[in-house]
Image (tube, rainbow, N blue to C red; front, side, top):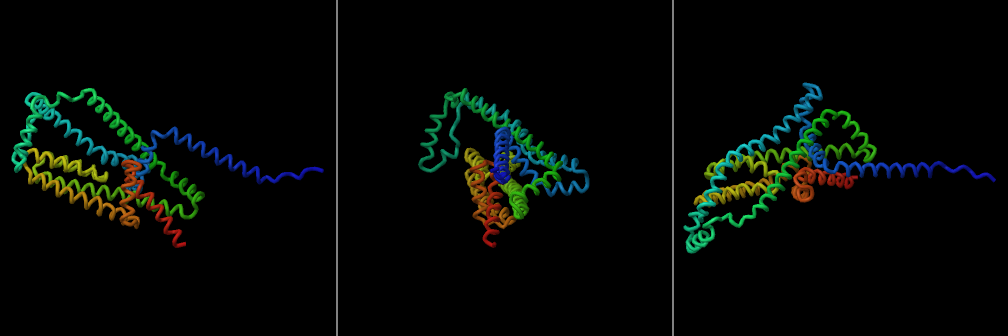
Length: 345
């Protein structure tokens, strides 16, 4: 008796499983191969989403390639200009630092005058510091360790610059091929997630743009307010320090390093009242910005509660570094949107 022909269903199912396994294997190999460039790709995606409205405006007045080049150039200027200004200002201070180093090695350091003026314990503390600071304060410095630290910092700086350059290159091609990329993402998203794919993509894009806008506006505000405080307090280079404060404000709890350092310098110059004023004013500005202004600004664009925005920012930075400033709120915004849709349905 002849066997009945087998149904093609088991074979097609096996083929689908093999196809899925092959696709996942290729994806894993691609991720492993491009692991070094994944941060540049992620930064390029964030920058492209943030600058998308500007690109669409320029595209209406010029071709897609010219608009992509113009927006990429503007992003490069916005990112590199503060760094270049900081490098130029720092280079101008190198001569003064070298002179101070030579004098310190020859004459030794002395305790600041304000320490000796402290009641009760001031003279004793000043005498103890002068006894330990006289002579060569750098005699015990490990030159080899300092050199190794310099090499590590140099390698990290070169790595960050390389990542930035690759990110800018990817941004240009993302803008230039934006029509094809959007069409492909819509098709793949519809096949994988169905109808919610477009809504989730819109929420993610809004979260990224809201985060970028919030960081930019808050950074400008902190730079202006604390730059004025530095100038009033008598801190040298208030514009440079204000710009540095604004840049570090993108990282939670990083900008206090600048105004705390400025306050410490004022203390060493016997300007205790100015030091306390800069420290108190900077603490208030940063506390309001980190705990109220930024979460409200970001959460308002995506209807995300305050606590989730704060957790997204802090958890994102802890998990992904600086890139987590954008990934953290975006992931939580997408998850909460899914939760709301499931709850309503």
